[in-house]
Image (cartoon, rainbow, N blue to C red; front, side):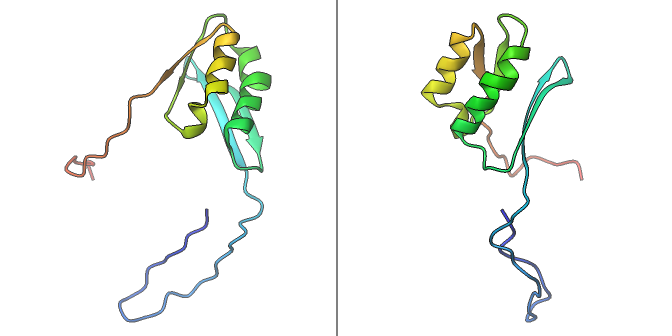
Length: 110
């Protein structure tokens, strides 16, 4: 999504152009196995559960070793019932990463 705000010295305008259509964007879905890139999918569409399931079914699952564990974050399109059913039906299992919790007091090391 393009930026909607910018920074300028106090009291001065922030010049710039804003492209609300943001054409030409490419989204990437990828999978790692043992630290190596196993599978990549590119799409100009926004990634949703339908796109993710197509990627799972046609690109990732055929390349997985038997009884693999698929680890995903908690994105909404990862949690849909048909996504979980697709993974289970292919003989694999899935796990979700722990929920992310922002800690503003944590030091970033900068």
